[in-house]
Image (cartoon, rainbow, N blue to C red; front, side):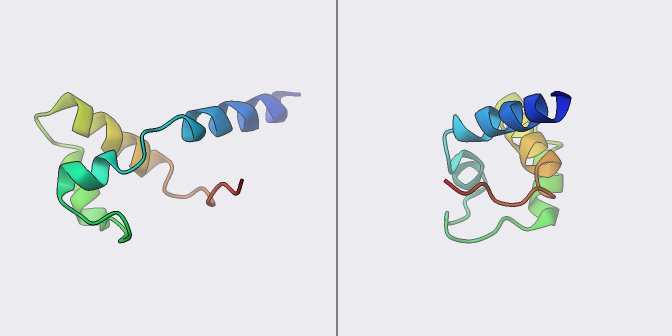
Length: 68
């Protein structure tokens, strides 16, 4: 049961995002991958929202893509 709950919460957290926000903030086209160096730099940003998006991208970088 705990595993099912983890999967459901991960799905909800990824499903309800506004896609492309970090790409726009970093000036990278949405079709391209964000380099790890730029994510690391965004983790130290003065903008709290950019830091939050970068933290989310960093923590979810190891997950497989969610298929619909």
